[in-house]
Length: 248
Length: 358
Image (cartoon, rainbow over all chains, first blue to last red; front, side):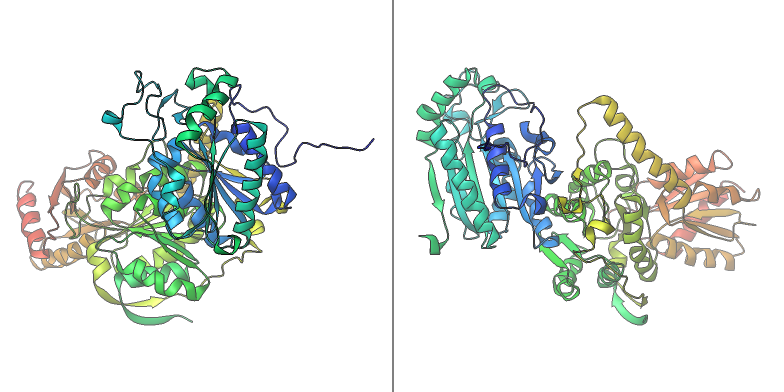
């Protein structure tokens, strides 16, 4: 019988610790599938963040290192100096990247560092139990904004793709979502584009995944997907924010 | 080929790091060591290495971790407040067993403090300024040549122990010029040789197995084993890395304990005291951790008082008291704020203290 599907070798055959309906697992698999298709699993070095995905090195079947909270872009910048020939990525959540690590991501992008950042934006601190993130939407409830995030108290959510797109060192920036099968397919194509551009060493590449956190949003997995469609995508529009001139 | 040249301290430190095998430097400007990043930005590319000016000391220490964890030989430097910012990465690297060499060209504190020489980083560097159980071997040179020699050996030492190694110099040493003998450059593994030379490093799975460098252990039993493991290395370090120098202990009435620049001033003070007929000795700790407690076993019964001489309110004195262990009184001569005492000032203080025990 002809085999028509095989689980990617980029993922180790273990059960993840992620909650039901969380999209970390989908993002992991998309990245690893693309790396396998590109034949780069053995030559890829990854940096794991602090946050729910801190254990991603137990699932991704490549050489990896952990990072202190928010510092993954500094670490990846240095790995690039030692390993000019490897594929290098950071995998970071929104507390890690958009809050404590905002200096590191901005300066890595500004320097035009030749690695790819995969940014999981679920609008909340998942690992610590649902506190407000820089990306939490106005009106969204969290354990540190129980009446809903207020603009007067906490300002407005941070749009990271839009922010990084202002930097000349960033060459590819795209925001995708993981709430529908069509969006998942589009997300995989975006991962491939970013990694292909990294192969050309043109500059900094960045993919933001709008993700779900049913546990801390207080929603079922399907309600969480609807929330992404109705609330999250309208504030964080999908699309390519920056791409190399030649691709236009 | 070794060569003797006249060099500014900071530049000699950087040159020694390169000759000792370091190829990656990540830094943020801070007085009194900014000549080091300047030197590295010029020189490292010539050796096939790389320099990155980091956006902060936090980024610099984490860059150091990234390069070292992926197999590179890393040397970084900063000064006291910058070292404080780097404690996150130092604690992380001790836990994750990642080797780097770090130089602290210290200044006076607390807070932003001042830019003049100080030794008030003693506790920060010997006790571990970061969270958790860990140790960092710290060596304190007293002249540019001794700094060059210590830095030159530190890369191999850090790789052997898979732990950060710190050199504690001070602003005076960084800024002055002295003739130094530069040692021969050491061999550095190529990118192709890294998987074999650093089998623990994150270099890709082509080597036939998978490496993960981590400091998180969610299971208490695993974390306990990990901490016990790194302490096995530290117990070995306590036997192997103790370094000190003594002089005139046999018949000394007074014994000074001093490290770094202060040791040089104290040596001069001892000569002046000798001319006055006062026999004084010196214990100069070179390894500040592990502290050379064994040096104090050579104290003579004739010694009336031990004086810890420091550019701080008295930090090393805790280790001195622990090492003297009640054999005689321990007193302090100190200046802070960036003021370095003259040898005559040390002599005056010492005579007054000695007067109390005649």
